[in-house]
Length: 207
Image (cartoon, helix red, strand yellow):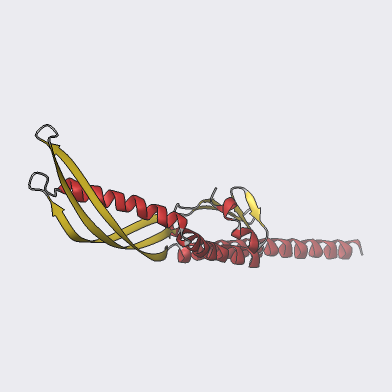
C-alpha cells in the first residue's frame, strides 16, 4: 500500500514538474514572439515621415556703396520673387529604443529632431545697378540668406511643424497599440504611457 501511495505521489510530482516546465517554456516562446513583433513594428515604422508646404514671398533688394571717398553713391536694386517648397521630416530609423523582456516594456530612449529642408526658386525682376556697383556673387548670397531667415520665421509661425508632429505622433501610436495588445508597457523618458491620448502631449514628447 505504501509503495502504491509513493508511486502515486511520485507520478503527480513528475506530472506537475513537467507541466510547470512546459508552461515556462511557453512563456518564453510568447516573450520571444512578442519581442520579434515589436522589433518588426519598429522596423516598419522606421521611415521618413514628411510634411510638405509651399511659401511665396516678394522681396526688394537694395544696396548702395560710396565711391570716390563717398562723394558719389552707387546704388543697385532688384525685385525678387521667391517660391519655396518646404519639407519637415522625421527619420524614424534613428529612434533609439530598448526592449526589456523581463518587465515586458518597450522603452523609447530618443526621438529624432525634425529635419527642415527649404528649396527656394528665385526670380529676379527690375534689376538696376550702377556701373560702379554691379551685382556680384555676394549680393545673391545675401539675398538667399535673407530669404532663408524670413522663410524660417514663416515656418515657425505656420502650422507646418505641428502638422509634422501630428504625423509623428500617429506613427508612434502604433507602438502603443501593439504593446498594449500584447500586455506590454510603452515608456518614454522613463514615464509609462498608459493611454493613447498621452501621446498627444507634445510638451512631454518633444521636451
